[in-house]
Image (cartoon, rainbow, N blue to C red; front, side, top):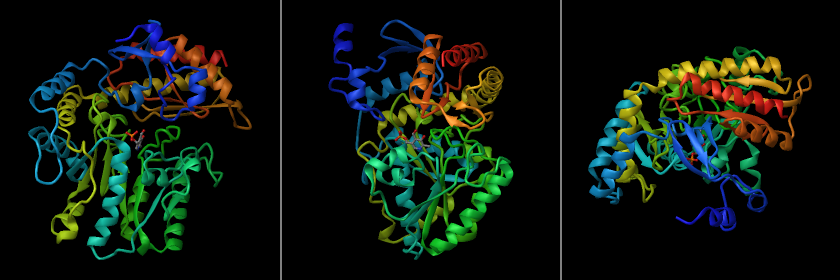
Length: 449
Ligand SMILES: Cc1ncc(COP(=O)(O)O)c(C=O)c1O
C-alpha cells in the first residue's frame, strides 16, 4: 500500500467517481475512508465517525461481520469463479438460490436471477416483464410506468424509469415508452394535498388516467420503491402500494417492487412490499443481500410469472445476464449474509432504532428553523428536507448544505446529501447510544448552517 502522501496527492487525479464532477473532485478532494469497525468509519486523518449512511444504504450488518467475511474468504479458496451461464453452475449459487427464495417466500417469490447489483437487477426485471407479455401473446405491452422521485439505478432502462431529472437530462434521449406518475410526497405535490391517504387516492386516479391514455394493452410493468429512498426518503401512506397493486391487477400490468434499499429489514420488515401488505410480481434486490461486502443483486420472480417462462417454448429462454451472475463468491456472501440477517433479527432493531432516529430528528426540527420536513418512522431510513425559508419551503442552497455536512461530520456522524435533503440509512445493527451520536452531530451540523 502506498503512503498517505501518495494517496492524498493522487486522490482524484485519475479516478472519476460516480455521481461526482471530476473537475470539482480534483479541486475539493473526496474524503479517504481507510477503515471501518462496527458502525464506525475512520478516515485517513484518523477521524472516526458513526456511519449514518451505512456505506450507501447497504452495510446492514455493520463492518465487522466475521461470518460473511469468512464465507467470502473460504469460497475464494474453494472456487473463485466459474460461469453461471447455461450449461454450468456452482454449489454456492444453488445454496444462495434456496436461501433467497426462502427469505422471500412470504412475498410469493419462487425464483431468483442473480446479477451484480441494483441497476443490473432493474434492467433485468424490465426485460423480463416485456418478455413475459410476449410469451403470453401480448407483445404490444412494452411500456413502463414509474414514480417521479423514484430511483432505479443508472442503466438505460433504470435511468428511463428514474424520476429525478438529475440522472436523466445529460443522457437523453432515454428509452421510449416510459411514463411517470406523481410521487406520494406530501410536502410538495401537484395536487396541493398534504393528507397522505387523500394524496394516495389522487395519485391512484392519475395513474388510472395515464393508463387509459396510454392504452392498458401497451403497458408492461409499473416499478416503484415501497419507500422512495434516494429521492428523499418519501414514505407513502399505508394504502398507496395497495392502490397500485389493485390498479396493476385491473389492467394486467406487472408490479415490480424495487427493494434494493427497502429489502432485508431496512423498513422494519423483511421487505418493503411486506411492510405495506402487498405481493408484487417481480422484486429487485441488491445492497443488503451481501451487506455490501460483495457486489450482488437479484431479480425475484413470483410463481405465476415463473410458470409462464418455464412452460414456454424456446422463446422462454432468458437472453440477458452478466459474467458475474451467480458468482460463487457473491453467492457465498449471500448465504452467510442472509443467515446473519435472520440470526440477528435486524428488522426488529431497524424498527426500534429507526423510530428513535426519526423522533430525535423531529425534536431537532423544533430547534432548527431550516428543517422543513422530516420523513421516516418506518425503519432505519430518515430524510430531512432543509429549507432557507420554512414558510415558503425554499430549498436550501448547495453551499449551506455542504457546511451542514462538514459540521455534522466533524461532530461525529457521516450523513448523505441528496440535493437539499439530508439522508440517513445507518447499519441495521446500530445501538441506541450510536443513534444518539448521530442526533448530537446533526444538532451541531444544523447549528453551523
Ligand atoms: C431503489 C434502488 N434501485 C436501484 C438502485 C441501483 O443499484 P446499484 O447502485 O447497485 O446499481 C439503487 C441504488 O441506490 C436503489 O436505491
